[in-house]
Length: 424
Ligand code: GDP
Ligand code: IMO
Ligand code: MG
Image 1: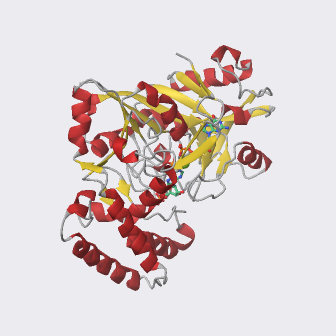
Image 2: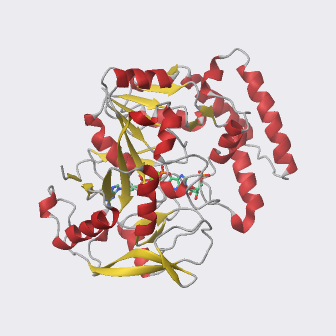
Image 3: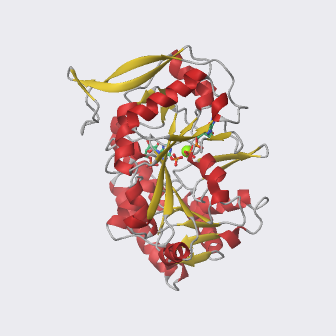
């Protein structure tokens, strides 16, 4: 069996997973998503074009490679329809290299309404969800009430759908949630999406994936969100509803732990977070504003401004531990150009005591303990080799490697596929 590599986010999402998966795809035979849904926004840039993917794996532009939506994903047919329509001009035969797991769960139009209703109920404790229906869809999955992709092929699918819709309407009513008149339109688009889905290969993708591996094919598993948004290990309750960590790749694709090869952990040279929840190194000041502007830090799915701050080493080390990261990929190093001083949080101070462990209760008052390092001023976006990088950037990378014990194998210096420096 050929091992399956995983690429996943080590922070709060938006680390640049889409860009790097696309850049690495030529080395693989297939790319598979294993969790999350259209809350993800993975941006790819090449040939002066920019694409944002939500459900479809980021290997899709390499038309000779297979892309698989695994069983751990929740799929919204409406979003899928829009995504395929947007890609159709450049990928006219997208049905040929995209396979969808029959076990992946469906996001219903009412799941989106429930998401909005629950956020409203939470008030100031709201999660800042993307409102794509992720939480309610995974809730139904776990409650054994969900509908799956394979169900769309059943003769009684519409009846099943209307029965779920009626149950959801009762919950919405109990939450005093008013259903907009555009619901019918949402439902029509959703059923159009269902019809489109029927044109794709719907399979028990666990057999496909294990079969490919047995034949010697190389598969790259693409994570969504980030470790700090993991349902178990993130800053609960300000998290998403799936396991974003490497273990999620086993359950989200149907592969044994022993089949996992490399675990590529991707992180930004600084930190961002979109939505609510604790963010110890957040800079609500001109530094944060500067990172946001230089890094164009606005959500790929919702357009919301991302909160920005310095690199958080305790959080990074935690993520590396939970995922078993074998190689680090650092993105957005170019965004840090021009800062005279760069700060790194090496420890937290909680109740006057220094620690490098993340607390169970993320609402605790965490004071980051920073070390300052000299920055670099050069524009690095056109550089092609590691040796050419400014000395201070190389020292910054050296500190991260020393602290984490994991090599930084890729340094990304711009959003384009080509703006990627491979170290080995
Ligand atoms: P993902 O969700 O992890 O795929 O990341 P997003 O696509 O949501 O956000 C990353 C953003 O940074 C996108 O706009 C990318 O085009 C961009 N990006 C990725 N890598 C780099 C990089 O090295 N430098 C710069 N300047 N932008 C990058
Ligand atoms: P990618 O794959 C960044 C955040 C939301 C919210 C919380 C829960 O592009 O990195 P949800 O919609 O899951 O109910 O939202 O998680 N969130 C993301 N933040 N990148 C993402 O995905 C995210 N997906 C969800 O902002 O705080
Ligand atoms: Mg994103």
